[in-house]
Length: 277
Image (cartoon, rainbow, N blue to C red; front, side, top):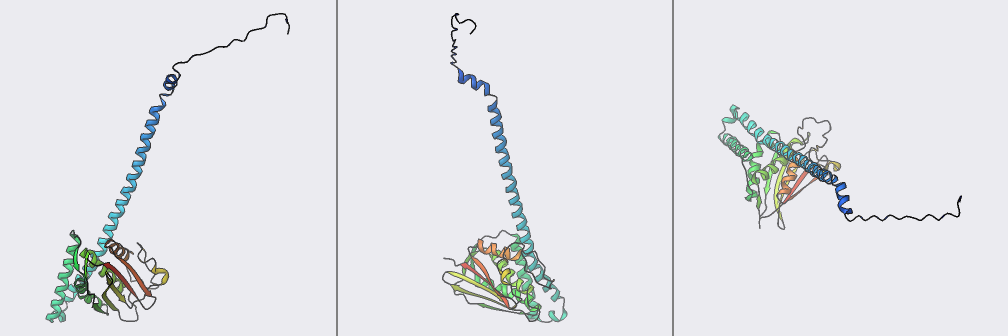
């Protein structure tokens, strides 16, 4: 110290009283609150937009599935009517009154089926044995034209089910149509349709002696757009929608379906539906 005899300096303390500090801080950051609110609004709008996009995408998929399924279901009755009409143009066929009556009945039935496709059909109590017998009668011409035979063993004692007749008919038609598509090239097609009861269920079996399905394919045949590889055969057309449609319809009707097959020997589709209580 240069001047040790001088008086020591006193320490000064400054006390600040801030009675409205919270109000001051709030006024300092008040511009942030509108920004936060605006950000939340943008976030909600973004989430709603994403939800709407995904919902529209789902609706578009449902619409496309519906169009694809309906287009697929129009093929069978149209081809059957076309085949019957071609046979009516054959002079030898028209000379047989019974064949003429049979063909006209097929055309009437298939026309009725087409009408069912475009009408809103609700589920109802259905005599399944009768419907399956009618389907077999209608489909017999197509099987015989393909050089095969079809047998029906409609033996279920209880056959009242609660289903949509149009879709129920389409399911059986699809399975029988697949039997023709995948028939064995070296032997005539033998198609067998049978019904039975197991506990409180109505069982339908559609069996053929076609080319069969390999084990690795059997797990995937009900997937949409999946098609079994047919080797050197290129005459089987389709988009892999038929069995996916069948699976969806059977599930929607409260039933289940599975396939049993031995490659090279044939395939059996088994449908189980609940009986009407």
